[in-house]
Length: 328
Figure (spheres, rainbow, N blue to C red):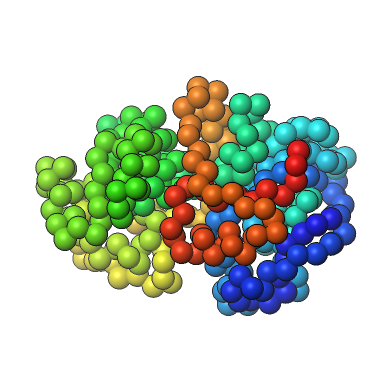
């Protein structure tokens, strides 16, 4: 099978293309013929930095998200059949072979039926982008009537999070870095848009929230924004952390203690089965209602995987980035 892979850490030039043996599914596994592979920031970071600074396997096929058609199933698998359209998650998480190849094998729980109204391109964005957004919005319970500050509202997670939060009855303030991204966040349904580069960004936020700050913050980069939490997070508020640009962050600890605010965090690869079931069910409902817009910002063939990684690494992509792997 045609695959993209790397055998050393480094820039996008370490990515190679070649033929590899088609993997065989175990009793509780599913083999999927990949149509589209989703590219996420964690993919280039894993390629460049590894896991804990090391290459975890001798050879790695990158990328965790994808969509395609079930090619073979193990004897204990019953929720999908050969020929079914599916989307997949956790491809290259604690295993060497991800979705940047014609075939991948995954534990059955990470292979989800893809509704007919969703394209393979959209399905390739449901893993990290949608499930992170869903978990972020509901990680601390119901958001109806609350004010949510969604950092990076035009990002792949933020764009989904705005739509989920609005569907759940929240008032949404989204941050962006410029006019093009403001247009994306507004189209997703954000009630207010703030440019976090404005010198008076915090004052604008406080004006919109009667001086309280946001009830919840959906945080893309703790290291970049934590120092502002004593002003932008409301008393008894919660910051939900799903990412951080740097490994260390400075948090105004005493302010959290005095005001009873909280920090909570998670990693999307380690959702419990209950959390995964809740996320996929919510996704199914939004798709059935025609209430989800998954923005595809750039498309590349598998041969150009390096360019796709480089685009994601710049942070300049407007929407999800996908690789076409097979013509299905």
